[in-house]
Amino acid sequence: MVNIWINEFFLKEPPVKVFSAHLDNLNKLYVNQLHMLLSTEQQIAKALPTMVDKATDTQLKQAFQSHLQETRVHIERLEIILTESGEEPQATKCKVLEALVEEAEDLVGDATDESVRDAALITAAQRVEHYEIAVYGAVRNFAQLLGKPRQADLLDQTAKEEGHADHLLTEISNRLNVVAQKAA
View 1: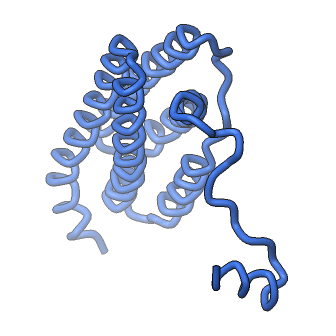
View 2: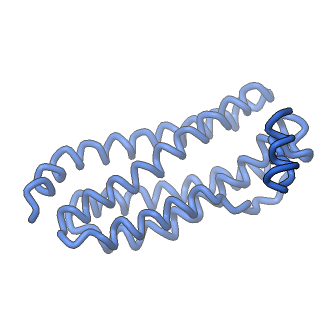
């Protein structure tokens, strides 16, 4: 109550809405997040070819190329889940991914040494993977609670693939970070 009063009288800004009136049940939240995940995966599919081009390490390039193929499958899965849910498979812009991609571009663009750039690419990619793992886990739990076991299984499969990608990036970084440490 005090925060609303401060906002209204001192900052002259309306109070921030915590919940959207349109998300009044778990199914609506579930569908909303599926549309957002579709945007997430589409943005990743668009960004990965640039990451492949910017990477200098062969194993890192292969990891990004492989994840691009997985990402295309993730998009197909989300389209299937949305269609099964009676929804048009249209993306709702994921602002988080947009910000992560922008930050990655800045980070990678600032790296002047190849090994440091590879380390920056891994850092950026792992941020994305951790975000995806979190959202897929939450949405999988929604599907389970909503009695959609097939959809929950598809979402769980994707969450596991994202976890595997993160693990692979950690393995690659354990080798590459040693090289980056010696740069300049």
